[in-house]
Structures are given as C-alpha cells and as structure tokens.
Image 1 (spheres, helix red, strand yellow):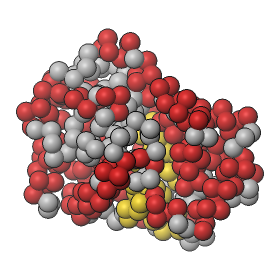
Image 2: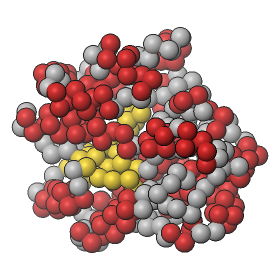
Image 3: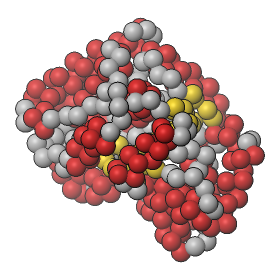
Image 4: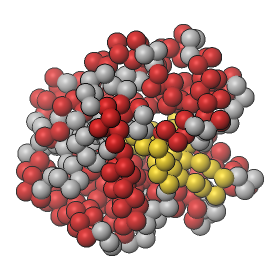
Length: 349
C-alpha cells in the first residue's frame, strides 16, 4: 500500500474537521505527511509514543482509545512501508507527585498491576507495543540530557505561557510551586520520540517541545490529538456549567479525574448493567461539534473490532451515525460487550 497525502488526509482531516476521533495534528497534516514520506525514503525508524499516569481506581476504557489508535497507526504506517516503533510510557514516578496522593508507596506499587493489565491488552489485541515505566527512562543518559536542555529554555516567556496552559485550573498553583516539574519531564520525554499521541490539551506541551527542539537543533516533533474524553450519564446542562470539561474533557487515563469515577467505565469493575445505564442516560447531540461520550465509546469498540479482525486501515466515520441516537446507543452497548468486555474477560481473541 502506497502512502499518499490523500490517504492521510482522508483518514485524519475528515475526522478532526468534525471532531470525530482525531481532534488535530500539530504542527499540521501537510508537515506530517512530508515527514513520513521523507522518513520512508531514508529508511528511518519513526518512534511513536503515548504516555499516561494512573490512579487507584483502575484502567479506564478511555485509555483503550489511545492504546488501540497507537497500535493501529503503527500497523498502518508499516503497511505503507515505514519502520515504526511504538511505546506506551507508564508514568509511575509522575503518578505520585500530586500532593493530594496520601499513600504514595501504595500507589507506586500498583504500577506492576497496571503494566500486567496493559500487557494482557497488548496480547489480546495483537499490538506490537512496548510498555515502559517512566522511572526506566529517567535512568537513561539521553533522557537526562534532554531534561537539562528543556530546563535551560523553561524560563522563556513563551515556554512559561505554554506550561501554564497544560495544567487544570485547580492544579495550577501546585505546578507553579513545583517549577512545572511534571511538564518539563513530559517535554523531555517527548523529545526522545518523533510523534506523540495524546489528548488535545497536550498541544501546549508539544508546542513547547518543538520550540526547544528547534533551538537545540533537535529532530522534528509531531503531536496527534484524539478527541476529548467526556463523562457518561450527564445531561446537556452539565457541560454548559463546566466549560473547561466541555473544551478539554476529563483526563482519559485517570478514572478519578474531576471526581467523576461514577460516570466512567473502569475495565474489570464496571458491570454490563452499569455500562447500559451510563450510556442510556447520557445526553448526546446530533451536532458533531458537541461532546458525545457515547460516540467516543462507539469509536473505541470499533478500533477494538478492527484490531481483532486484523483490519489495519484507519477508520473514517460517517455523520449518519449521529442521526439515530437510539441506534447509536444500542449499537455501542453491543459492540463494547462483544469487542472489549468479552475478549478481555476471556483473555484471548
């Protein structure tokens, strides 16, 4: 399969134009396409990663969107003739930096459970992805050098302004007091890779990363952002009175983000009955620009289906799916059970 700008644009541009599953690409789709074609010509290995912290509540179904997309994108590029490595970074050290975490040792110890479950997901869905702890990266000389480089540029007004935008309002003071430790470590890690997959708010990390990379004569860097994660079981008014969540959503990989764990699906914990309740009580609109947590679940289950059936084409979704809300909810419930709940409970395809 030949990699062409039309294939890339069809899969990505049509999606983020309507915010269906890909929210956007930084610094732009044309730049990414050119970079991929040059990398192919030079037989260069492209390194792609997705990183996440975690809490005590377990693995959210929303994390699967990133795991699945990372794996599918890797396979898509390989079919196009590129050399691609994919990594999921489990930010074990970053997960305990929050001052609100009481039992830091206990939370840190949960990292083995996290990676064990992740390895099961990798096995069941046939992903060729490595799971690596942040603490392992921290020991690498190359990472420490990148971190020092990032710190050298962190006092510039432009970079500081971007760092502020990476943080939720209720965490801003804490991040400032720490000297934006988490943000600087995130940027340093990003500079070890070529492409990062993440939620929309991370564009601010990536803008800062690109500034540092250019000033330090580093490699080209890209960000691909998937649509925000929204809580299920909420009405339209909820998003009106929570504009920050409407714009950026909640943290996809932390079930307790904004204390909304009762409105999230946690793998291995949320029953089928609760799944049905959350989906059926969710307000969704036929307007593709508005929050639609049910359609997001539909996409996640469809990515699961594609991986299980070894269909490695990037998906393009029609707006007609949003016209029949009752059908969308029913189809989503059935697909989540068929392609996620059952395969993971059985531990095999």
